[in-house]
Length: 386
Image (tube, rainbow, N blue to C red; front, side):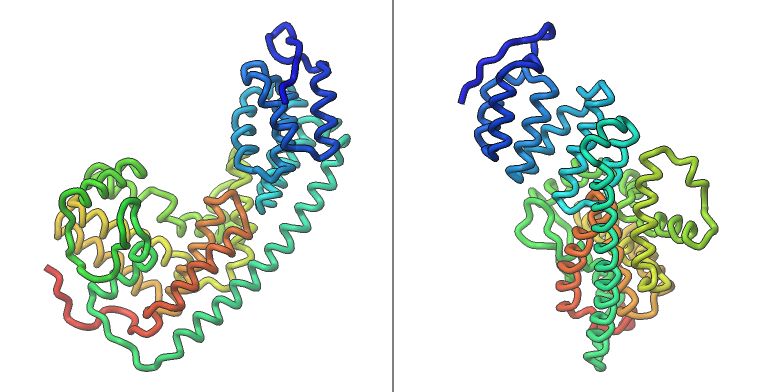
């Protein structure tokens, strides 16, 4: 379908053009693919915001959320009026709702009322907010029940085999980095595994790992590696948990009101999440996730020559000593590791409670089928560290 249209003074399709009658009829008749085809027949440099919003609506109804998100990203800087900004927030909220991110969606729906109350009343955004609240409450209840069930599963698994296998210090340290050990780097056929503590890479494998460090994390040498380990949020979840726990205990580390809008939104969601998993966290909180990630990065960094044996051994010993100080058993460590994985995914994946639960389900299946529960906590045999 090719639509004819007239241009306004800005060279864009006129908002009163008859082409919109055709497109709106297609939307009303649920002929969304034809509506997309018609819009695409108009050169993109002639698109008005009205036309773009219509395209986003069609994509959402087709459940083509990838293209909907791309168009929302493109229209965002073009929304100059209050009505356009409110429409953007509504469509963004709708997309987030449809992709299981009710907590994030609620914020965008609330922004609609703040930006353009008249438009919010017109589309009954209060009803959408109420639906989000109900969905969030249900998902938080599911999260709490899941964490309780998972904690019991880990406890049972750790009690299955009373004859535990003793580990060397190296074996203990590599198992602390469980997830990185079974996670494949881009371009590699197999994961790093738990053996060969001092394995080094050469040739293409070494260059591929160095490129991975630089491209994804900006790590190019020993100094930038240690700076990353100390500061990156992906392997320092315990700091965030500490701030959240302090707030929940009525002894906040900072004045939340001094945060900007984005900061309040982020912190508020984390408080909500932790409040529903906190009862299952061991003394070490989510430290196991941080330790596991740091050990994984350290093993990869040593393998590609970012630092030498001395730095590697001292770093790994320091991390394992901290693990033994904060946890008394694999049961505690495994619970901390899984709940830390869930908290990490929640914060990184648009505050999706469902996504967090699904991630923990995947990770727990791997963890429960591993041999961690069948080993002694801590390295007891003489190590071969050099």
